[in-house]
Length: 126
Image 1 (cartoon, rainbow, N blue to C red):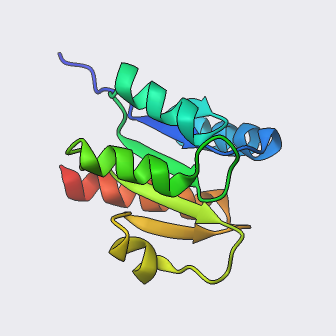
Image 2 (image 1 turned 30 degrees about the vertical axis):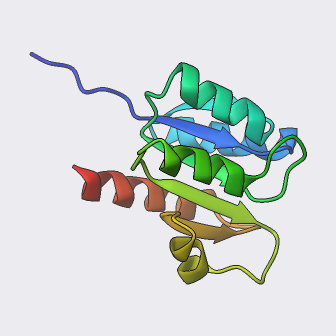
């Protein structure tokens, strides 16, 4: 009998507290979580180990922003779900999708909203 693979999520933010909180919540929901504290580290992880089911990335960080991570994923042909998050209320889901993201989450958000969005995107992709 084949065992189901646990989906791996790359979580990228410069806030240690937020990373720890969201990691815990995603793990409780059944995801394996890998973390990065900046865009450059995220791109390196994606290049070294691209076996991620989804990426959740903050827009505004030192050491490489979320749009740079999104651009690196899309320019390499990656079609995995990418969710942008930010405390900037000027961005919305429609704008994020125009940029090539799967969706947008305005901080603060409920971890259940993130879990639901990732699960929905994974169900659509197969």
